[in-house]
Length: 618
Image (spheres, rainbow, N blue to C red):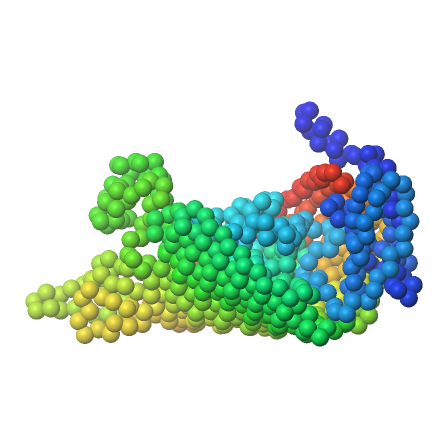
């Protein structure tokens, strides 16, 4: 009870510790007011947006030395040092920037300062502090409600995560507003993007349904990543790290800075390797990032090309509890119940109980290469209006290789092998399961910010083509059979279209009303046969309406509160369709009603916040 009273007392704080205020106006060098400018005391949560006359007030600020940061799209940031020992009134003059800031690329899909959405921002500096070669999920593992996992046990290779207990297949992920979730599985395979954090400017994690975005449904959360912004000075950097399990990271980055006030070029090359904690769970990862941009005062055109190439030993199964607990009788039951062969059972019994890996074939590996291409465009018409557009294309190709002991020829559409008077029904073999996919499309957004209104209209169209097939590359007893025998092939075709409108209106200086409406349309078709020769031919169509409403209240600079309700819909994944009994109940879409309430209080010395949510799934 005492703890509850203490927490409530914290929430009741209204800033009585603070003593001074900073007020003033944000103006252009021609003394024109700049409404909507961001005014922030760096290192604190104290900040405000200037009103229609460019005026701002920061109240209840303790005595001390601060840096006041004032920024507005199309203008150069101002960082002004302040020694606060009395009330101050300032006029902040912003010079027109020679180039447009790249924050515009993610504005349409991000929660702003006054958006009633549960969110957390991770800066470039915070990413660099943690970036020792592990995958992005491990760099975000200290954010609220976030749990990261690693197949290899070292955070390098196949990594996964959950937010609020929701698996990664239900979390929307974008880069510069462009979706990167796999259209069929709905997941993101971070192993295909090694050391991507070295090319990121910042990340925003929105928990719950969040704001409308492009791509996969944001059922548990959304993660929005922005790639590196312009560095005006030329640079060359090397970053290296070494760690347990023979883990190594080597990264080289170079950039030209701003050339002739209009052009810049940046590049990164990375190599990461690790033996892994689990037996044989090695990773060998390479990646690059290349970017070229053209800047004007009101326009940016930017091309990003980045790719990853990975080879990882499979460690997908984890350690059985009987091996972890050294339960000899339990391990023997694996053989008795035909779960493992006699050889596999003996290998499990002889293995280290914490690092055991089922696979022992030397090339039981996953091999995949993915290439991303993004063409980004933004234009600022005036202080109030800008448009963003982007085209994207991703190509991926790869396979995982498996050794199979005593598989039946019939399982691969191959006749039994007759040698003399003996008919063989099975053989040891090595097979590869391939994926060859293509994902392309475009996104567009229009943003209007003036006086009390902040309006965004966005849309996106994406199409995915995925080819799935399998080959046998070796058989112990092959006879006259083709050693590159293809035993199945199928194709998935998915088209995803969405349009959304978002409006944030300041009812008063302290109270904002928020509305966000999205319509999403999905067409998905599969044809061909699966690896068990089942005919997968099917077509599906889904249309979803996703409304979101909320209130944001900020009575002072230190305290803020919000309430929101949002609806999300999610279509079934490929495996939901392919694993379903053709004669049984068929998978259907999921619906989520997400209710959120939050409160936060912060000063230059500390921050405290709470978020209560109720997520109703069907």
